[in-house]
Image (cartoon, rainbow, N blue to C red; front, side, top):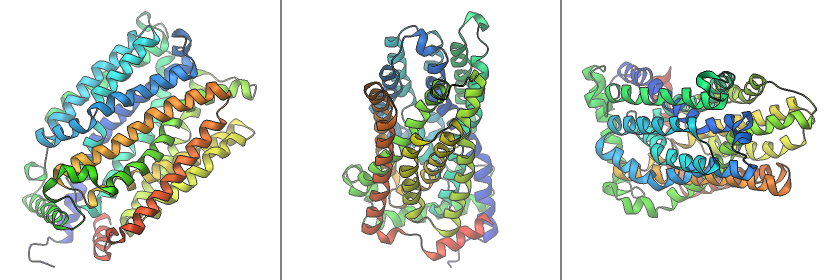
Length: 455
């Protein structure tokens, strides 16, 4: 151990302060971001689909075109964040997407819906990879799985709390003379604008500027991150001096992009169509649900998913992230999602879908700890954005293809089999990547330090 190495106490307090001061706020931003992004899934079966005369394919296209707008500006947006700083750029993103989201309150045709969904993607471009990059720049790699796991909790919890909230807002039909689904869009959009303004004053770009850290904590974080970046830059498989060309031509980056494609394909197939599938239970099983009933049923898979996510990432942090932390859940999700088609009741169907949701959310934060092992600086900004771009391609593909196949075949059998295929493909590619780059497994010493730091 070098003379500059801090005590375990300094490490613990520094990581704890980052976890308490930054992660909840960025997670809250993600919560609002994901709620705005998926609000259309609650609106469609509760009046919007009928009012705008949408087919399943049209709804799928409206859901998916968001990702085309996101893709157009994702990499440039993340490069701008790297240049101008997370505080300014994430705040800008939130305010602009909040304004666009607010306009959904007055949408009156499918064409307007397509346009606003595309613009929402443009406005949100770079938020998620920017948040991942921002948090990754605050903690050493051995703590990133834990930090990203805490951040990622916002995504399943968005549905746990957001679905009942959306149902309650939709139940306020007639407020301000608006249909219930329009009331929902109005009130889920305003928090983004407010949080964007707060973020401008609250976020800090790097540990060296954090006055809420002690000098010893600032020095330790700064030195640890600098040493880690220097090691990555000097490694033969890394992207020396932030070489963007190498980030875009790296086989590892593209394989990770393909792995992420499979997970996100499944994530958004569930996110956008689960409320519609639940709405269909009424005819399929000859039962009736109120708007709030459907909202609570939609939320059911996501609470266990949040719990599994927490303990899975904690295990990965304590014992070191391994290939099976990502590939294992991919296999479980790939096998379970088609099984949901053969259940004989709403309860059994939702139970199997819950297993799929747990698998997807367990793997995602662990997955995002992998790119930062070999990317740094501008290459990290570009590489992470490129991987997330593949996810956005999957978001568009899963939304449109699921709706189109449902219209073509009259059921969700083929669409959900396709989800299973892509998740199994993700597992296979993750194993392939591990075989090719075994040297990236965490060292035992790093595992021991992480165990001590998280208690």
